[in-house]
Amino acid sequence: MTVTDTSADTPAEAAEQPEQAVVLRRVRAWLTVFIVGLVLSGATAFPLVTEVRWGHELLLAWGVESWLPSLVDWFARVREGLQTTAQDYPFIAYGTDWLAFAHLVIAVAFWGPLRDPVRNIWVIDFGLIACAGIIPLALIAGPIRDIPWGWSLIDMSFGVFGAIPLLLVRRMIKRLERLQADAQPA
Image 1 (cartoon, rainbow, N blue to C red):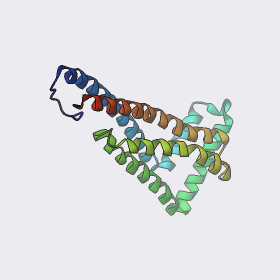
Image 2 (cartoon, rainbow, N blue to C red):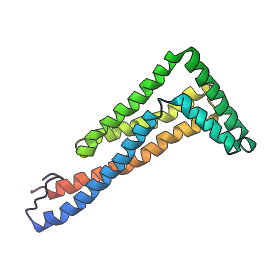
Image 3 (cartoon, helix red, strand yellow):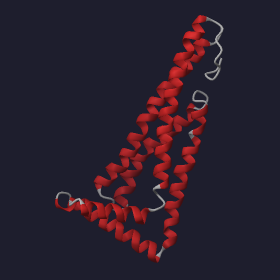
């Protein structure tokens, strides 16, 4: 019997189905949060010049330069770099367009576990590997690209905070798998 099957042959199976349904709903809720996060992070990679300008202006309006001047200086430097690049070398932004596209494609991959979590648990494992890979990338590429240490920490936090829902989902999928196996007739 699958999770989507609502029939129950025995009272024991009837008792198991509500638990399966609850676990499945939780899996799907967490996966939806993860997918939305991927889509938003992908969509925000397109308008970088505007976003960084807004971010810099917001930091100035809030007076952040008085207590975190290095952050405001970093935003100013990134803003200048993006504006100059956009004006003189607009084709460079094509790289971040591909970054955005990759986020959207990865989000689509999580449609499989959304539909059938047990069968597609490998996508969750893939996502966990990708989250873990963020940390060495930030540690290696950050210094090479002159990224401030604090910013590299922010980048690494995406891997950590991305892994949390995936670890929860993986644990719930394993529970769902056990529930399904227990509901199968011997």
